[in-house]
Amino acid sequence: MGVSSSLYSGVSGLNANANAMSVIGNNIANANTVGFKSSRAIFGDLLSSQISGSGGNSQVGRGVGLSIVDNIFSQGTFENTETNTDLAVEGAGFFIVSDPSTGNAVNNYTRAGAFRFDAEGFLVNPEGFNLMGFQLDENENTVGDLTPIWINTQSFTPAGPTANVDLNTNLDSDSQTIGVAPAFDPLDPSVTSNYATSIQVFDSLGSTHLMTTYFTKNADQNWEWNTVVDGEEVTGGTTGVLEIVGSGTLAFDPSGNLIRIDGNDLYTIPGDTSSDPVFPKPTATTTVGALDWVNGSIQTQQVSIDMQTTQYASPSVVVAQEQDGYGTGTLVKLNVDEFGNVIGNFSNGTPRRLMRLALAKFTNANSLDKVGNNMFAQSNNSGVPIVGTVGSGVGNIFTNALELSNVDLAQEFVKMITTQRGFSANSKTITTTDEMLAEVINLKR
Image (cartoon, rainbow, N blue to C red; front, side):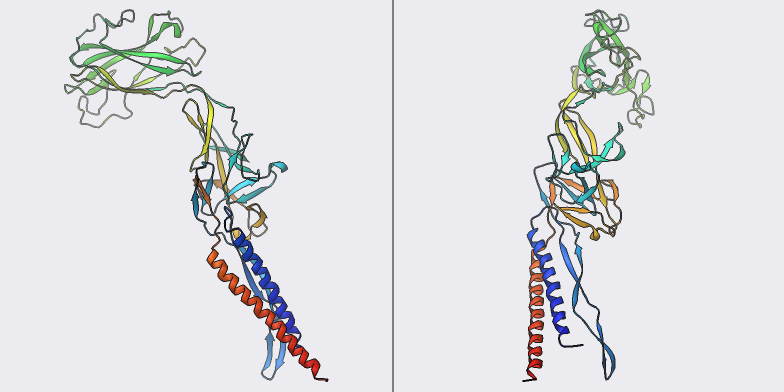
């Protein structure tokens, strides 16, 4: 092996360290790039040459080469933001994005979670790539294949008919006993009842109806309840005449605690409020088929009334009441929750989960190909993506957060120093070899 071979060893060192400096420079340049993952250059010695010596055959190296540039997928720190569609992945997962200009034919993968809804309702990254996810069925389970997350911003949410009413009241134990005779008369409710409370309920079309419950004291610790609506709102009713849509009885113990609704005990030991509550709790319910609204809404609606009622020597009063129905509403706001659900908030105050974003992970993420704009592509060595939803083993997400670059500037500057020294040392190898060759040439002089 001649003296000149050391020139090529030096050149290989210059090339390898120059490539390493390019990697370091790229890392430093992206120190503030959201979701950026740093790289490192791995060197390997080149094939050695065989030489013969007095002690036998030996090997002399022929320089150094760049083996691989590794992607470093260590977790970056999180920055809190004020935008709910800013998302950060914790774990090994990647957001799945696709280029709409290609018909979303090929998926790319990214850790940069700065997403926004565009004018058409697609959730996109700054480059306009669609974030991919799944449709949800009526039970909020994912269905179908990956598809761009898209929300119809002009959509309505359907009405939800009232199914349950919570009625928290006290009935005055000192009220006058009206008794079974006369019984409650919808034509003269004020005379045949002691107390009444009203609440608005919704039908399946989102229309509201005033539903009133009258309480009539029949005897000490015993009351009758009657729920009515205006007759003009139900089939066969008369305008201005109350139509009874549900009735029953309430029984209290001597301490004023409710122990029985429509003959059903609330406790496992009848009349003993210290015993275990019956489950499910008995409730008052409107009569089957009584809420046959005349506006064409569902005719089978029933309302369960949870009588959270006491009978104390205090004026009859409604402490609280609420119902679970709601009318139609228009979309007013979109956000993403920590489970990856895209939630629409509607003008009727009812949120709906509309879609769920997907995440992917790889068995060998270090071998993913960088394709620019903070995105990666599947390679032959990365393995196929394992696609799932948040919490299914592919990672978790944080909303109002972005994952920052994982570049460690201190470490990069140390690498820069050692790389520069390596480059300089290899240049000395070349200049020294040049001087040796000059000496050889001078031998003839």
